[in-house]
Image 1 (spheres, rainbow, N blue to C red):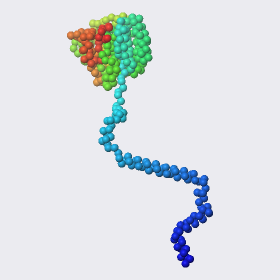
Image 2 (image 1 turned 60 degrees about the horizontal axis):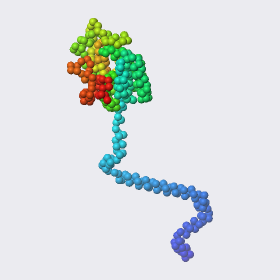
Image 3 (image 1 turned 90 degrees about the vertical axis):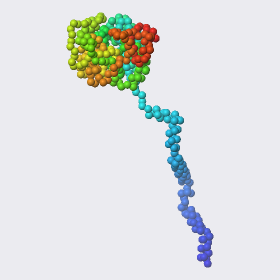
Image 4 (image 1 turned 45 degrees about the vertical axis):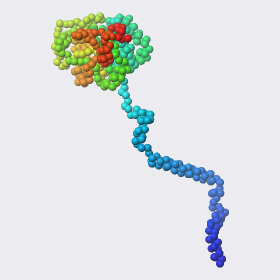
Length: 382
């Protein structure tokens, strides 16, 4: 009976044995770690960090699952791009960078009494990116040459940019003689010696004037290949071939200090057989690479042509034309235009007519960047 009673008591209180075991263990020191307070703070800190990490993981999981489960439709995104400024910024990043503006090198030439007109032309074609060389020939008195140099130094823009030079060594320039080529090549040599960065070289006279601004001109040429040479050219034939190619002239400007007209000799020479003769306008726009070829002449051909044109009448209208049209490297770069609007008599004479207000519409319609020639202080330039 006693054994049966004990079993019944154990069934009624099944946790009694556990309670007795716990109480006995507590007296024996089994839960000393929790009874000691120095372990309580690390335990609670670890528990708090674990709970925080579990909460962050659960939140991030819900967010990622929400984004993946409900993306925006592609058609809605494409249509909404037109309504946001960010789409314009994205398109601008994909656009190709605009080409770099070219740099031009000008030679402005004049003679006695042309210093003010040279300043007028210089101010009209001036741009900080360009380079300028002014040549006032030896016929001008020293006082006029000094005034031109002082006006360059006194201008604050020219002095700051340092891109305007006056040739100290002046030469006589004879009309229709090779001295014009000599002064042009001398100006090119100065620009190359200074190692200045420029893409095209242009020659202007004191009677020339631009029809477009330099900003517009640089913008147009920024879209063109830097290998194009603008030079009006044609093969020398007919009466010009007999009169110019076979005749021999002497330019007094090469030997004397006073200007005079060219001298004709009685001797005649035969036509060259190793190259063809070309002619065209004396006003040119040539690339730096071609002019380096003319100056350095690594195959000696430009020097040969220069010696031939030393005794050639109207050599400024044939030297560069003959060199470029007989050179395999540059013949395909020649564009037959001198970039000038020039009015001629009918039938044409040796000199063009002076432009005035009555020629204004024709100048605008010509789409040429330059025009010549103009009288001093003509109202059309105002």
